[in-house]
Structures are given as structure tokens and as C-alpha cells.
Amino acid sequence: MFPTSLNSLVTFEAAARHKSYSLAAAELHITHSAISQQMRLLEESLGASLFERKGRQMQLTAEGLQLLKQIQPALRQISRAVAQVKTEKRTPAIRVATLQSFATFWLLPRLGKFQAAYPDLVIHIQATIGLVNLDKTKTDIAIRFGLGKWEDYDAEKLLDDQLYPVCSPDFNGGRFPINPKQLRNCRILCVENGREWLNWSQFAGIDIDSFQHETHHSDSNLMLTAAKAGQGIAVARHSLVAGEIAAGNLVRLFDLIAPSDYSYYLVTPKDLQKCAELLAFEQWLKNEANAFAGGAY
Image 1 (cartoon, rainbow, N blue to C red):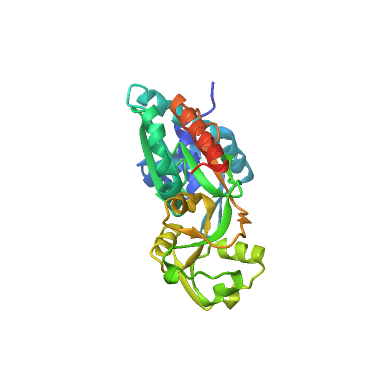
Image 2: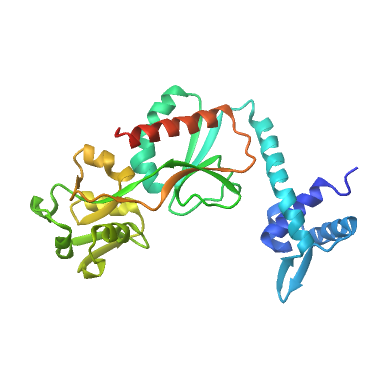
């Protein structure tokens, strides 16, 4: 017989994750006193203290931390198993999270081919600037840009990327800089806190501090929209601009192509029981990425 109930473990996980009885009570729609009572009974059942107070903050004890690490994967698996049973008779659906720029310039132009193969599958796409918590949003898979190290998630590399400057064919009346040093006299388009210009300029051997005219944008979508409008020169990821170059909306400057220190990864929650549709979507993404890396737009 189990020494405690599943309900008390769910309550403990919420309290431990939030480090707050009040926030756990709000999430679980029960009272603060009910949380306190359940945690007291759980600690008595286990014969160990799970929480301790340090000033005004609540912290996990060593025993509490050990319990949390053990039960979180199991609770996630139980939650997904219950959800799967509930949705077995519903229309199949998958939830995908990715960056706005990647969704706009890479994923959406290709997605029609997958939808044609799976016409009954409902696909929910959540495009954001920042990272999405896959567990809280019940997201099945994310396409993230980074180093591939995200705690509590499985990550598989999807696509490496490259960096190079681009601009509109109409920029400056079609009179483009003929070498990187001439960029200091042009308007430079940047993403706030972005690494693209820094990485490419180091590869090209130029000093970005010498640039005199800059416009900063909150994300790559805005930056590339400005570039297509002829407002300046952007260093962009190949994944985002290859299609725009092929369509004649942008042109690449110079022959200097720098490797990106970040890559795209397929990210899923650990212990996720993947449905057939999700497995098919993953494989389709890999096939498209391989084709793109081989030169297909």
C-alpha cells in the first residue's frame, strides 16, 4: 500500500514548484489551509520535513528536493496519459511552439505539404519571441534556437545555420557596398541583444563599433521587414532569408558566410508518449531540414 495519496503528491509538487502555498492553492483551486493540512499529513506520513522557511521565503529541504525530483516525471507521465485517453476519440491535434521569425520565414511556407498529407490533423502553432514552457502550455514539441541545453527537456538538432548580410535590391538605388569596410557608411539593421552582427563582423574582420547609423528592432521579423523595405542592411540567418533571396525580395552582399554559433533543435518534454501524428511531424521536419541544408528552398 502506498504511504500517501496521489492527491497529496500533486499538491506537494505544485507547492514545491511555486515555493508558495498561496500560489499552489490558486493553481489547484483549493484553500491555503487545505494545502497546509495536506503538507502536514504528508510530512507525518513520510517522517520527514519537506519545507523550511528562510526569512520570508519557503525552501525545499534535502528530503523535499529528492521527493520532487522523483515524482515530477511520474506526474507528467500520468497527466499526459489521462489527457491522451480523454482525447483518443477527438480530432487528432498537435501543439507546436517556435520563434516568430522561424515560423514566418521557414515553417509556414513549407507546412502546406504536411497538411496535405494529414488533412484531419489539427495543428496549433504558437509563435513567440521567448521560450515557451512546454509543460504549462501543454505543448507537444518546440523548435528552439540555441545550444541545445534545456533542463527537463529532450533536444535533437534539426538544422545548423549561417549568417550573412542582406538588403533590398532597391537599397541605396541599387548601389551596394563592395566590401565590408564600406558598411560603416550604411544604415545597419539589428535585433536588440542579437548576436548576428557581432558574429559575422568578427568572421569578416571588421569593427562594428565603427558603424555610424543603426536601427534596432525587437525581433528578426521586424528587422527583415525593414530590410525588404530598403531601410538598411541586416545580417540574417540563412534559414530566414533563403526563400526571400530566391523570390528576389532580398540580395546577399559579399561572399563572407559565417557559421552561426546557435542551431535549431526539436525539443520535447522528457517521458513524452508521442502519438503517431507527432512522430510523423517530427520526421517531416527532419526531411525538410535535410532538403534545405542540401540547397532546396
